[in-house]
Length: 307
Length: 255
Image (tube, rainbow over all chains, first blue to last red; front, side, top):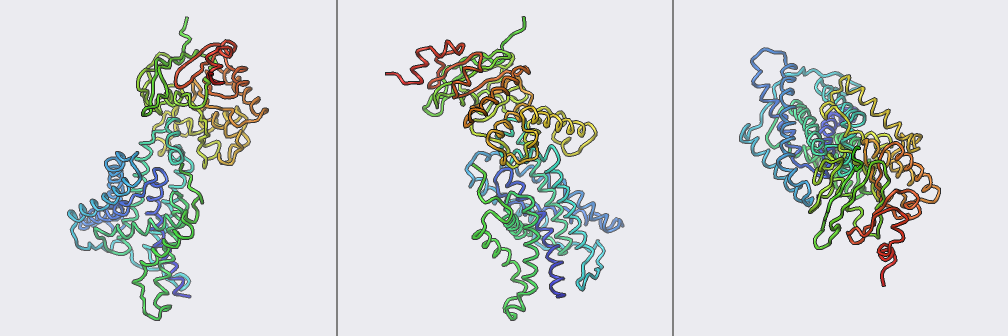
């Protein structure tokens, strides 16, 4: 039971991060039908920029949480700019091209970002200094660390804000209209190009936060950390129903929990033949199952709306 | 005397590959009239709509709205210049509510930009409340206020057509272009649509109408033009046009 609760807590924490990243995939997919495989690398850039700022400020004597906040304050605009440029330079010229072209371009952008990051920050694992309080709180036999609470609360707040933005504001209205029928939205005076730019920037801002969270949680950052994380978040988005916001949130949480349950119990179940290092297998096992049994995802529409 | 002409289309041609969808079409629509565009399927009526709403660029020719040349401008410009349309095959934002659909139509009249749409200061908020009120009023105007919070895809067919009209009206058009608004409607629905269109006209909005329902067209419009194979073959008052031998031939097939 203790293992169960602990793995549940870990799963929710991991899942919150997946949800944030999955939202970036799903927002972009919803509005232009593109799977932006470079999104995971935006998370990496968020982590790297946060770390760079933290290292610059490390001798300044500022309190740890404030230093992290400064790092985040730099990472968010930097990632938004990356997202904007990515769309403007790589995807917009291919807006009316066959779907395969932007998809392959996305993979190219991903490789490009990884290599640029490697040139700037090197091949080594960079460690994230211990700036946030490390103590843990007992909770029904499990333990929750301060940073875990921060991750869950932070991503919860961000997702709530995003929901309000999409449901209640004029921008959200324009985004939904553009995603359902871009041509008609244009006739209503919606500037679809700006809406798409903003969508990329929103997704990238979430990615920046996720990047900070991941590197603070695991204590490291690496130039190709975005690859696997991106794939898993993509899996989460597909699990929930890609293009569907609530789906991305739900899919992220579920995937996080499935993974950490798997990691917690796999060893016992297989008599030690497989350890928790098989954790990653679960995400893709889930992806395969979803694609076989419910390709439109848990909350997705059964039939595609796209004409 | 002020110029009575609202939309002037001059020698517009448009081809797709070897198909001439429109050949030298010229029309002039006057303020306050209901002008119908009829013709057999594939005659180029919808193509002409797509040209005047900026979806297609004409290959040659031009059109002016209140004397301002709009040919080849972007669709969002057309909305700002006062041209709004509905679609032959209904194209609503199906997963948004009726109210939200109409509010989307207000985009081209919003003063606060896209950044103002996120950071809401006092002005923006008043504007947003106004937008919602206006949208509600328009739903009332077309008679579907009670369905304001229903998703567009769940509305009945006739109500979807009305919602499209409300959404188009939300852009505050001077010219409302309706592509087969009565398609698929029964008698009583068509009758109440006729009432709605007359009311829109009496509120000062000019209507350009594509329609196959001849009874509706002949009863409703002031003038009409007939297109056949992308050419205008007749224009005039309903009575004159319906007795024109060219028109009879186009509809019934020549021997």
